[in-house]
Image 1: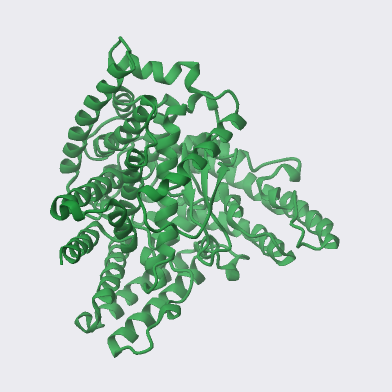
Image 2 (image 1 turned 30 degrees about the vertical axis):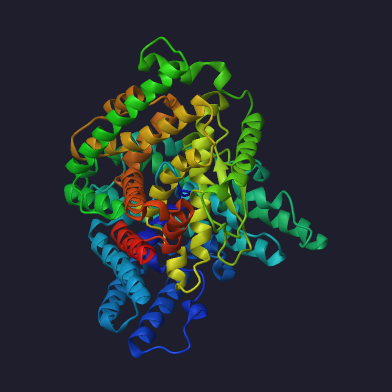
Length: 597
C-alpha cells in the first residue's frame, strides 16, 4: 500500500481537494508551443489548482518535495475548510466551461481524469469526513512523522521545522474543535480503534525533550549545516518541546480521554455514520473507480477466495504436509524456521530480496525508471499499529528517492514466506515503478504525473506480485504460498470490508474469516481488520484493480497472439499513468488496436 498520510489534517485537507490536483510543478513545464483557447484554459486551470493545493495543503507540498511551505501546517479551521470546498466547486465550474471537443485526444484524457476527481471531491463534501481528523493509523498525535520526508540539509530547513513545532498547539486546538463537532453530530470513529490512540498521544509526553519524536532531526546534522548553528538549534528544539509541544499534547490527552473517547461509537460499520449507507456506496465506488455494488463486490470476493484456496491445497500437497489447510496455516504461522530472530536480521532479509529482484526486471519491462529506491524501517512509535509495509514516493524533482518501509516490530510474527510477494508489491516492480514511471511521462501535465487512483495503483501492486512468476522468483514453494497468501489477503478484503460495512458483520467475525482463509499471523490480521474499519472501502480497490489489469493482459495476449510482448504490455499500462479503470481499459484497447495495425 501507499504510505498512510501521517497527519490526519493532511488527510482531511486532501479529501476536500481533487486528488488530480496534487501536482508538484506547474504544468507549464510541459506546455506545447501552440495551443488553442480551450487548451490554454485547461492548462491554466491545472496550474492554478496545483498552486492552490500546494498553498492550502503544506504537508502535501512537503511530500511532493516543494519546500516553500515547510514552516506551516494545513489550516483546519472551519473557515479554511469551507474555503477549500468552495474552491473545488469553482474549479469544477471552470472545467465544465471548457470545450472538451476542442482538445486533443491526450488532453481529453487529462480533462476526463481531472473532472472525475473534481466531481468526486465535490460529491464527498456532504459526508463531512473532516469531523474525524484523528485515526488509529495517523493524526495530529503522530504529526512528527512528516519529518521522514523533509530534507534537513540547511539551517533554514531546521528553522522551518521549529516553526512547525511552535505552530502545533494551534493544530491541536483546531483538531479538538472538529472532534467536538463530530461527537455532537454522531460522526466519530469506532472506539475499538480510538483506544489505540491513547498510547500514541502518551508517547509524545516526555520528560526528556531529546526523547521526543520531534527531536529526532536534531540528533544528527548533515555536513551542510554550519557547526556554529547546531548547538543553538538543539537548545531551541529542547525548549520548544518542553514549553510548547509536551504541554499541548498533555492537554490533548486530557481532552481525548475525558471528553472525546467516551463519545466515540461502539459500532464499526460505516453505515452507522450519518447517511452511512450512501457514504459507503460512495467510498466503494470512489476507491474501485467502478459502479459495482457492495453485494457484487462481496460475491467477487467469495469466488476469488474459493479459487485461491484450491491453489493453496496444491502447495500443501507439494510440500508433503499431511494435515488440513487450517493446520497448514498454523504451521506457517508458528514454525521457527519461517521467522528471523531479530529486527536487524529481518531488515537484512528485506534488503537481500530487493537486490534479488532488481536484475530480473528486464524480463518483464523494456523501460526501467530512473529514480532509485531504498529500504527503510517503519518508525518504532507507529510500527505496532501499522501494516506490514508501505511505500513512500520520491520527490518529483528527483531530490529524494522512493522508499520501501518495512515493519520490524515483533519479527517473530513476520514470516519469511511473505517477503518476496510483499517486496514485489511495495517496491519493484510495484509501487516504485508505478510512481517513478508516472513522474517520467513526457507530455502529461504534472497532476497526471503525480495522480494516485487506488484501484490503478494498488491493482498494479497486486498484479506486480504475480509478475514474480514471469521473473522466475517463485522457485521455492513457500514463496509461492506467500504469493497465494497475499492474493488471498486481497480477496478476503472484498468479503470482510463489505461484510462489516454493509452486511452487519462483527469485528470478531471478520477476524475469524480472515484467519480461516489466510496463513497471515494474528498480529497482521487484527491490524488489517482495524484498518478496514477505519478506512471503509479503500481495501476493495486492490483486488478489483488487479482483476482488471489481468483481464486486459489476457485480452491483449489473445488478440495479438505471437505479437504479444509482455514487456510492452506492462510498459503500456504504466505509460497510461494512474487513471480510473475505465480510462485504463480504453487506453489498452487502443494500444491493442495499434499493435494489430
